[in-house]
Length: 244
Image 1 (tube, rainbow, N blue to C red):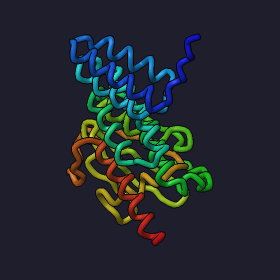
Image 2: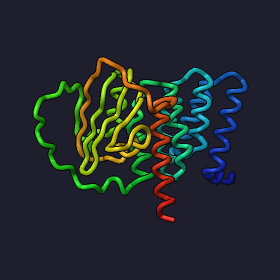
Image 3: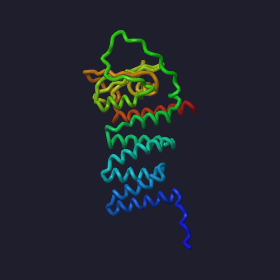
Image 4: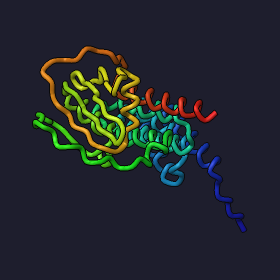
């Protein structure tokens, strides 16, 4: 009587899938490599190694949508392991593959994981009615729409103007030229320090007012995403230093 084969362990299954994928790529069948990896991921959805391989094969063989999708899934897997540097890299890569991709949920997930203390603030009191109406283009509640969502909308729309932010104990503005963040103001602070102070605001309101003229550039970053991720990293480092 033939002995039953023992079920493969996670490690053995992953190694077999990676080997098969490499062979398919070697013999110029990348679509079969993708399908083999997708099949393995269906059984082991939290395997970072399998998803990284699928991301790599998809990107190298003309499947950018699948590569970007895997990047976004990997962001959450890396956050769960508190590997924030890798989460940053995959988020930037997803944005590079598809500049119009909404990565605001990923940015918010990183902020929540790095700074959970920012999400226990009391809701902001209703601001007093302005004496004269402003020509507001876009407005919202920060407890519903995060600052990252707002930045994404303004970037995609390539708008020039000021995003006013008002929280329970902090208010200021983020200034945009053609959808790019170029400056920020928060009380006496300006530039990247002011932007960091405003990123810490998680409740309150915001509104955006268009400007005909561009603003002087005080913040220079490769992209809005780079600026936000660098800011979140600095916030985390400063918090850790303060706890030592």
